[in-house]
Image (cartoon, rainbow, N blue to C red; front, side):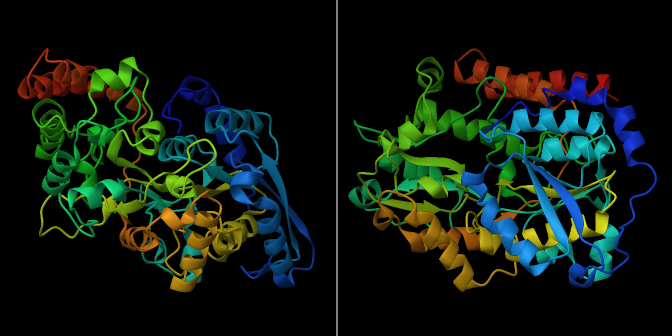
Length: 453
């Protein structure tokens, strides 16, 4: 996962004039038809720019299925990185926009890339198409994509975060696979699972200003205000849930000694895959992009049984199910001359196209239980030992997961992440207590916010 969201900000900002110019005028569909382009008189070719490569997205099969259903719309696929490198793809997309290349359908891999290019005028709003179809996006999909009261994307895959469990370790400790639990129960499990041979849990961040999800543990369990900066632009570091996250991390590592020490993570350059598949940690909190590896791979063979638990909630009476979620943001380019056809493609792709593709769990709520079951079977079949995976727990977690309300990342996000990382290290290395950590974080963050007003 790439975490340097804003590394291209300066370069992208230089594109504002170019992109704004590209977004003006035109923009009407050349076909003159409604969303059902099957009856269009003339064939239209739309260009689809994506970071996704063939092995990860099964484009040949997927696009062929779309073109069969919509024979008057041809999709010209532009893979921006054969390695699937999202940073490389984003840089190439910016260059394509600056040079005036044809852009119709755009795929963004993270909220920051999406929000930034919306702000630059590179992406068209799609509210009119949604209103024309007459559906509520938040009822139709699991992921909210709204920015400034408008929709600029439909969500593709649905990758909620969850807890990887070494079920063999659970069985040995006499513990059940949790179907619904709190952070207090998570901490209790971590303590009970810790032995002389392994830790109860492992947290892969923060590291170098990245993987800051691990500094939002309690915040991310909520429906709203899950980021360090709230939607109104004010700091969220005074939230008791930020303090709770610090308290949990310190409790598990320093007192319970149930979490892999931060010093080991940094000095030994530890990675969550090695820690889990090497059985050095019984529980790992991570994103469900791991679905394709749950049964083990050639690089990480599986010698134990695996189960999945949902992202913990804060209180037992809470609704639960809220978790960090990653998706692909499917957008229509602002300078596209075929906006209607481009929308037709992203609407199809984010619904039945996800089922055809068969590579990921869809954000679309219209997928049937049978289709979801088939997709998961296909994903697990690609692993080395699918029989060692508790499929029932995986399906249950994926079906119950929910995305919190989207808060567009701020342009100075990387600066804030650096501050949180640095102050956390002072805490976990024993140089300051929690209250001093919060005070220093609040003061430094507020200075950054004020400087960017």
